[in-house]
Image 1 (cartoon, rainbow, N blue to C red):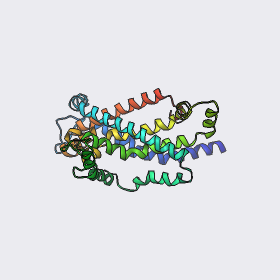
Image 2 (cartoon, rainbow, N blue to C red):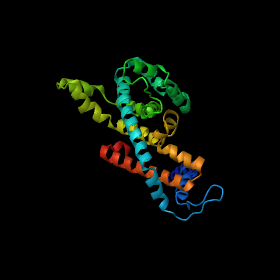
Image 3 (tube, helix red, strand yellow):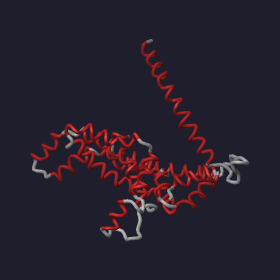
Image 4 (cartoon, rainbow, N blue to C red):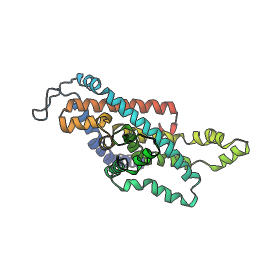
Length: 284
């Protein structure tokens, strides 16, 4: 009876999680898929009808494929910058921080104690035309006198990089911190220079953190709309801005649902190919 009792206990423990996932994942996902197949002639006022209108997907893709590519491009650039900056900082915390390690980790997560919206608005002030950043760049002739940063792709990518940088640093630190420093000493004993030690020892052992960090950065950055809305212009709109506008302003639920599903499928396919290519069994 004891094994059967343990089995029932396991099922009972799973029930709350199953209910939670059903309410906040399965049902919303079904609702999204259903809305993507609505009759596009409907509206919020007259109501929508389920007609399995597959044409919605082609309409969404044909109208907004440039915005989709722009979103993936911005998210890819932000992920790359986060990887470069985040790896450097995570390496310093893991191997060089010493007794300041905990303090530096607190500083990494400190931005989470303020609103995402507030942090983005702060970047709007920093990159303003009359701000010190633009003034400095004009003084050293990196941008022309009439040049600006706000309402440009630079501002949007900078905002994405800043806001999602902690999501890159924390997995990288967790992966680097597990590396035995005696492996570095062994590499030095075998006459490997620091450059070779990094690419032969540190980088391969930190790949699980690299993959986790890039996924945690790229996926939310692809669907983000706050940074493009506050730091960009209509020319820098991302797919999240289009979906938000279609759902809340235009009321075109069919097109918004189709565009959301397309984005979700593209990201899932890219993630599967990326993990397969990276070959990290820790994430499979």
